[in-house]
Image (cartoon, rainbow over the protein chains, first blue to last red):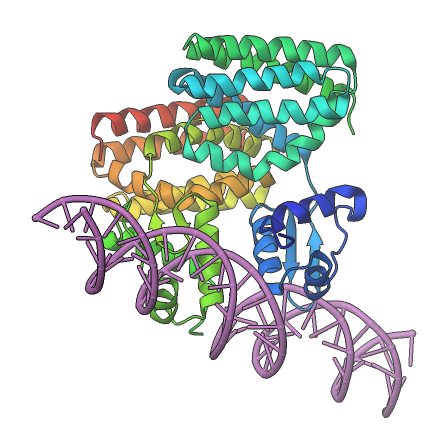
Length: 205
Length: 205
DNA sequence: GACTCCAGATTGGTCAGACCATTATGGTCG
DNA sequence: CGACCATAATGGTCTGACCAATCTGGAGTC
C-alpha cells in the first residue's frame, strides 16, 4: 500500500510545507523518486501534472523550479467560475448532491472553533458544489487549482467572526441550490467571494 | 526531428480527424506508440495530459476511451473567463502585445474569405488576448481548452456575414485594449461571446 | 438453449536501468 | 581577469519487463 499513485498530491504537500519557496529549485528527479518511494517514471508523471498547472517549471540540464504564484489572478478566476458552478449546481443537483452539501455544512459548523479544520471543510464544500454542477470543464479546472485555493483560504479564516459569516453565506448558497434557484445561488456565491476577496486585500499575505 | 515531444497535440489531431468519436475506444497504448513512432512512456505522457484535461479516460484492463464532450458547458466557462482576460489585457498590455494583436486582426482580415482559415486566425487572436492578460491561471486554463474551442469555432464561422461581424467585434476589443480601457474591453468581449453563443444554440452541431 | 464460472488473453499501471540532450560548473590557458 | 572547454549534473527519452484489473470465450451445468 505504500506506493499510492497520488504522487502529484504528495509533491504539492512537499512544496507547501515551506520546504520549497517559489523560485527555489526542487531536488533532482532521481532523488525525489527515492525520497517518495516511487519509480522515476511515476514521479515524472506527478511532476508533469504540476508542470501543466504552471506550478513548477523544468529546464533540461538545469533542474526543476517552483514557479512564482500570483494569488490575486487566481482569485479573480475563482470569482468568475464559482458563481457559474453554483448556478449549474442549482439547476442540475440531485438528492445525492444535496445530501453531500448538507454534510459539508455540518462539517463546517462542527469545525467553527478551529481555523485550520474550518478552512479544509470550506474547501471541500466548494468542491462539492463544483461536483454538483456536473460540468466536466469546471471540474477539471477546479481540480487544477484546488490546492492553491486551500492556502489563501486557511489564511482568511483566522478570524472567528469571518468563519461565522462564511458559514452563513454558504448556508444561503446551499438553500438556493436546494430550491433549484440558479440565479439566487449565483448571486449568493458572488457575494460570498466578494467578502472573501475584501478580507484578502485587507490583509495580504 | 522525427520524435518531437508534442505527443499530446498529435494525439488530439488524431482524435479530431474523425478517427475516434466520443465514447469510442482508442487503440492500445503499445499500438499507438509504434503508430506515432515514440516510446510507450512518451505516449503515456501525452495520454496523461489529455486525461487530466478530461478529454480521454483510461480504465485499467479495458482500454482508453474518448470522453463525451459537452460543448455547452465549455462555452459557458469561456463566457466567464474571456471577458476577464480582455480586461486584464487592457490593463497590463505592453507595446509588444499590441503589435501581436494588430497582426492577429490583419490575419483575420486576410482570411475573411476562407471559413477554415478565419477560424484558425480567430482562435489565435483570442489566445493572444489571453497571453496579454499576463495571468498565469488564465493562460494555463486556456491552454487546456484551446483545442476544444477550435472545433466549435470553425463550425460557427461558416457564414461569411458572421465572420465580418466577428472581425468588427474583435477590432473593437483590440481598440479598447489599446486604450487601456479594461471595462470597455470586458464588455466588448462579453457581447462578442453572446453573439457567438447565440449562433451556436441556433445551429447546434 | 441459457446460464455460470473460470482460465487465458488483453490492456493500462508501474518499475528498473540505460542512454541522449542540454545546461551548469569549475578548472585551464592566454 | 576573461574566454574557453572538458566534465558533471540534470531533465528527456527509450527499452523491456512485470503487476493488476478487466474482458473474452469456451467448458461445464442445468
